Image 1 (cartoon, helix red, strand yellow):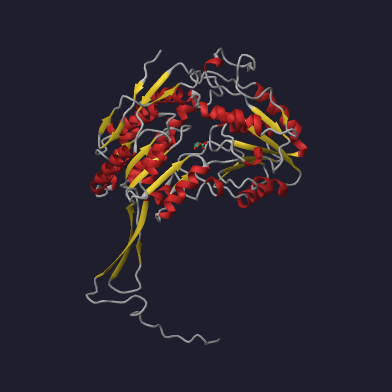
Image 2: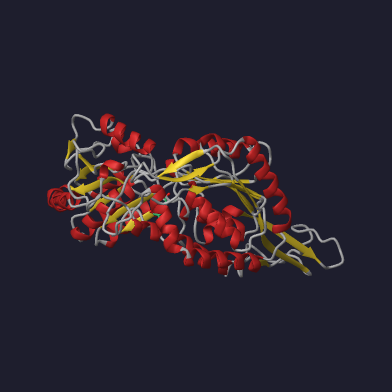
Length: 517
Ligand code: UN1
C-alpha cells in the first residue's frame, strides 16, 4: 500500500508541518490514507496574509514577461509530472484516471495561455481632446487574493485563479479543499520549484472554519480580492462580505444544467453527451447535467438508447482505464446523495435506472471491471423520469449521479424549462436547426451554452462562469479573467507647459446646425 503524504502549510516560503490535523482518504478504498494535513487557524491565516502582503510590495513591481516566464516554468513542471499528478488526484478524490489526466492537462493549458500573456497584458493609448497631451490605460494588480476552492477539480480550478492572478502581479493565500490536500501540496511544491519568490503563493489547509477565517481578512483590509468555487449558499455569504468592503468577489457556484434534445438532432451523439454530462465524474461537476429535456416525439426512442448505455456504465476503481465513473469524493457527498435519493424522489416520479442509493452487496451494480465496490463510496446512477418544473429535483443541484427527465412539445416550452431553476451556468441543446440553436443561445440565461455538446467539458481559454444562482458574472479563464485580477488605471500626461482644462479649454467648432440644402 502506498505511503501517505505529510502535508504542510506554505507561508513565506516555509513549509509548516503540524502533528495534528485532518486526513484525506482514498474514496475508492477508505482503508487507504492518502494524506494528513494541518488545520489552519485564524492565526495561521493572518501569518499567511502578512507574508502575501510583504511579497506583494515587491512582486507587483516585477515585469510581466518575467512573471510569464515563471508560469512557463510551472507549465513545464506540471507537464513533466503529469502522470504522477493524475495518479495522486485519482487516489485522493476518486475521479477516473482518464479524467484526472484531463484535469492536469487543464492546468498545463492554463499555463501555456498565461505564459504568453506576460508579453501582452495590454493597456491602451487613447487620443486626448487637448493638444500636447497623451492618455493611456494600464492594468494594475489588485493586491492580495484569497482563493478558496473545491475538491472536484482540485488543481485545475485553483490554477484558473492562481495562474492569472500571479501573472497580473498579485500574491495569493490559497485554501485548498479539505478533500484533496495532498494534490494541493504537490501543486504548491511545483509552484515553489518554478522560481516564484517566497510569499507569492501561501497555502493554508483546513475546512470551513479556515475558509471563514480567510474570507474574514476582507473585513480586516488584508485581502483585496476573494475567489470562491463551491456551493451557492456559501458563495452568497462571501459575495456579501466582499460587497460590504466594496470588493467584487469572483464566485463560481453551483448549476442545475439543462440539456435540451430536439427531434431533428443526431440522437446517438445526444445520447453519448447526456450520459457523460450526467454521470462523468460521478455527476460531481458544477457543469454536470441536472435535467434532461426531451421532445415528446423522440422521448421513448431516446430513452431506449440512453438507458441501455446507462446500464452499461462501468463503475469501478478509478485507477482502471475502463472505469466510467468512480466513487463519490467524500462521505459528505455520499450522505447528500443518499438523502436526495430519499427525499427528492417523489411518488409521481419514475426511476428508470436499475437502482438508487449506495452500492452495497445487497444493492449491487453489475458492471464493475473486477473492482471491489464495497471498499469505497460508490453510488448508483439514478435516472428519474416525470420530473415537474416545480419539483425540488428540478430546481436544486444534486452534485452527484442523480439526473431528472422532463419532456416538452414546443420549443418555447423548452426555453421556459431551461430558464426555470434560476441557475445559469451551462445549458446545452442538441439540434441541427441553426434558428433553434441561436434562439436557444439568445433566450437561455446562462454563462455557457453548448450546441451539440455536453453541458460539461469547457475549454481552458473560453470564459467560464455563470449568472443568477451560479455566480455574480465574474469569469475565469482566457483573457476575461484578467479583469478579475487587475483594475484599470487611466493616466493622462500633459506636456503643453500650461494647465489645460478638458471640456472647458476646447475650442468651439463654428457650424450652423440649422443649415438645410
Ligand atoms: C467545476 O466543476 O467546478 O467544464 C469545473 C468542465 C470542467 C471544469 C468544471 N472543465 O466541466
